[in-house]
Image (cartoon, rainbow, N blue to C red):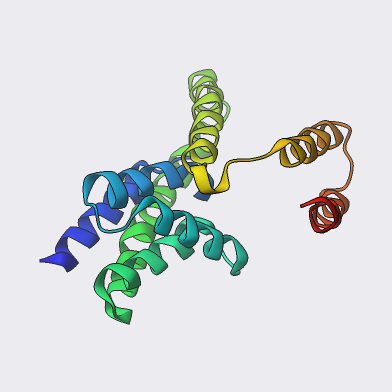
Length: 173
């Protein structure tokens, strides 16, 4: 029964997870922590951290780790992975044909523009959901974030920002 619930939960995440991996994190957290209660918020935060460090999209990595954690075996990991990947793949195959045919239509362009704020909001929600009392940002972390945010608007190379953030983190945190 857990396999069916796991598949259904990640299938929903796959269908409604617009905006990529970080936007999907709030949906995954809602399904596995709040609704199903399979893992705790702290476990979810750890899984997200591990998912960020491993190569590949964060939604795929986190679903795989959660599937393994919930079932305790590779089959659960594979099932969660399949469930989260199947809807976007299917939808993208169908929408690509539709989009290529109607991409110059003003209604389609307006719909795509309307999705942008929603995606930004879901990424922001994911950031806030990952803040727990044990990892709430301190003043130095907020300062590093602010400097990187301003620098990114000034078109500074993201690789330099990542390296500088790591250096400041090692020195001050």
